[in-house]
Length: 278
Image (cartoon, rainbow, N blue to C red; front, side, top):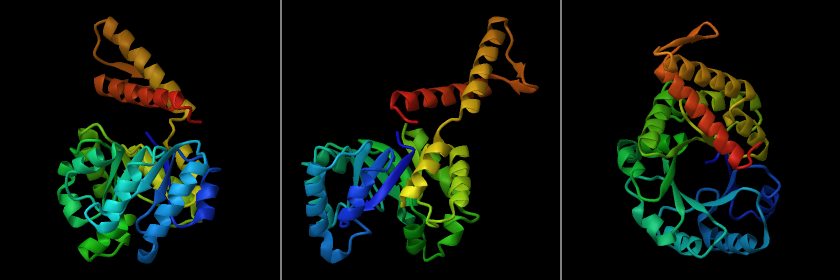
């Protein structure tokens, strides 16, 4: 369960070292897009060495290359012996990923970012060992022959988010929102986090350390949200004891569905506390 997942290029030792000082819930050591084709072996060697040397406060994940590729196979072999790595991210997921889980013994996050992946998202989400679904508008645009903007921040963004969130929740997975590319527009990042949270997402992948505190705050239930949820639960349960099916809370009608929504928020807040999230 991650609010923030920070990508770090696997070939950049300086940034990997710096990531140990960032309060991200998970760090993603990237062996895929941020590593040039001729430096894949070098990146694996750097990651393997630093995993033995460094400590992170959160989970450590690895984004592998496409599992069917030569580099993807080498990545899976490496991850299977890296005990510090708790999960891996599979890019351009288009089919079940059971074999990836079985080959590594690590939890899997599928990234849906191709036309075929969108059409087969239900199949992907049903994979054994999967814990979360993520999505990527840039690769999806390339797959469609489309522009990035309508998928990233335009009219189709809410549709894609609803698709990913629905598939994830249908299989008990966490939906993790896409990367925000505009590094310095922090208010835009905050708005995007709240939009994703409102549609059911529990976290976001990020590409810059400055984004982490904003993302963590946005996806953590606020004190006001928790207090209101408690009032809703208490009021509804008291109404049920009196044989009523609905009750007014602060001039708002509360019935069974609002009760379930409030319970969901309280459970999530409790899980955050149990993991030590601030």
